[in-house]
Length: 243
Image (cartoon, rainbow, N blue to C red; front, side):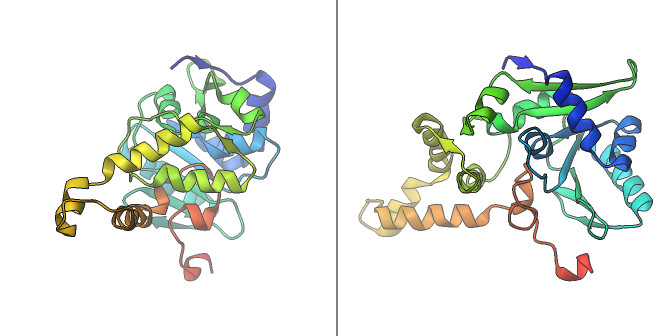
């Protein structure tokens, strides 16, 4: 993938829109901001949450604890992420499911080009830096979903559910990208098992549809990292957790 960078104006905009405590945390801890917060800020929308990535679970857990203590908030933990909650403040997610040594690795892991952006603080140079895919700006301007065929472990239906959310927000998707998303689901279908269960050696549309519906329902909402919707796209948070 050919990497590029945010304009200096957009980099400054995103950094200044970060909550002060998150900005200070990023300047101390080795964490990387990626995905939805960057896209939504540049597009002039209100981000729903903040997703931070790192190279190890220990780094992320310590950073989450520091932020939680500073906010006098509470943590909601799963195997996939630690979410720091504090009143009406924007939730901050520390993503544990995928670990990345380099910001460029974060960018390459996203399934659509409009999500392929990362920002971090370079301590050696005492400067904020960014990396984006070549398609980030043009596809964001066109509100166009371009599938990246990412090589990462995830539930097969994740990208399809994200397509649905993006379409609801006015994005479009061309046939090749939609085909790629569909192919990911199709690759997870055990066609031979379906045919065997049917007893006639034939996998009917109805039987395949039932399997694919199950794949979509199996998706752990917390793996969807792009800030589309805190409740729908992330681990459902019990109302008591927010009280």
